Image 1 (tube, one colour):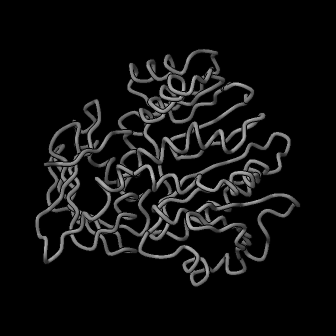
Image 2: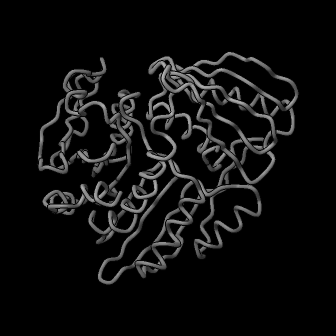
Length: 356
């Protein structure tokens, strides 16, 4: 695992390029993590498949070696270039040894939304990586303990999407442990957290959220952010990919189902209304997906879920208040499976495990 993840750092020329990305006042550097379909080359995908409203978009190769490709994206939406100012860059760092890539950019929030929309058009060949609230907490604990980083909270957002939806914003100066502890006690999760961090001569502010976005300011550079945050996320997600997401499809040669269990720490499916809310969330969030209800009674649900873009299909079973069983069927791709798991994580902030 380590050798594959290290493909992002061996050589180091791309680190210099990303470390020297020009800073603009009040605009943080933004980093977002993606998984891509390892059966295809992303360069071929970008070259041959262009979304209609982005048909004038292009790319150039900034750097390439045996481990990585660093692309400079020129995103053009409806003949309007994004971004439209000098020294604004959109880099996509692609690993050749693992199915991951990293978006790094210094553009503003409005243009960043356009870039995300552009990359989202490439689903099911490219998909974002989401994080659980508890994963963010564990990540910060590891950084503080192992890397000897001083961390203090500037602000945070806690949420809940199910049962009684709620959003709170906090600005109290406190420790991140206290923020996560209080959120857990009130059955909420930390959706994003804004931090001041100091490590040796480097100091600055970092924001990380459950949608996989990391942004940073101050004299922090990309190399430091990669070492502290990104490498640890990829180490964990690499294991999830190969142990959970990869090769789950049922085939004629292997008809045995390979279910996984998604679970949360509280009872979220106690009433029929909770099941209705789950189905409504499926409809609103998984576009170009559909489902057939095989059984629905009270807080019990059994459906067949279809991803029309990839041809993937799943049986979904809810038979207890705190868990969902996902049973992959035929033609399941790792990207499709990742999208489904990300939906569950984003909606319920639970965990996933293999079913023996």
